[in-house]
Length: 243
Image 1: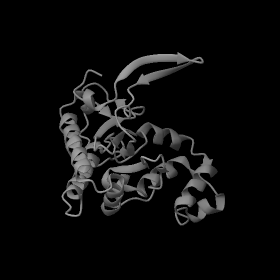
Image 2: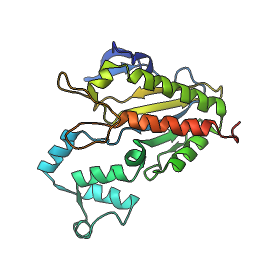
Image 3: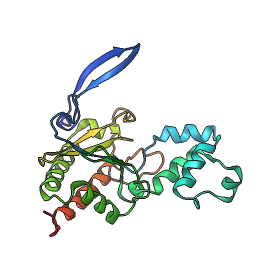
């Protein structure tokens, strides 16, 4: 990547072929950390491409597996007809999935946290409010002011750079994450990762990334989510009960 975003993205070291499969060699972001804690935040107001929704609508097959996922989170979510079929369509599940978390309310959601002892928590599917997100960050950082301040400054740097980035303006950024990493030495950094669904726009078109998504406009809400994340960490870092 020859874009201003390069300092915030893992370095790419070429491809390697192993057992007949081709893999990307990427920078190990954990290498410089001692017993790191890691959080994955999925950015934007949706995690599916518009074309995925269109394709799913063309062949709306009933999915029993997605019905099971739905009732595991919220037994009241399916309609009477869906309960009778014990199945939901993929478009229905995709759109419902975004409404139960902070993806819809804040423009990002916590996907998971790995603590320094290796334990993993992915139980954030219904983490929706600003207060719930703030509590998750409190626990993740153990209320350490230095770590929170480092994260906040890094996020502000990412935001400033995104607003200058020609790559960002000309791409729909879907399913991408911000990876938060800190350790006991109070090292703390954030990187942009997961660009598998990042899609270029037709030449000459740009996105604002901070206006509501209406099907067809391809807006992803990335900047809106980042602004909300910055405000949450700003408020949290000013708390008097931090250490």
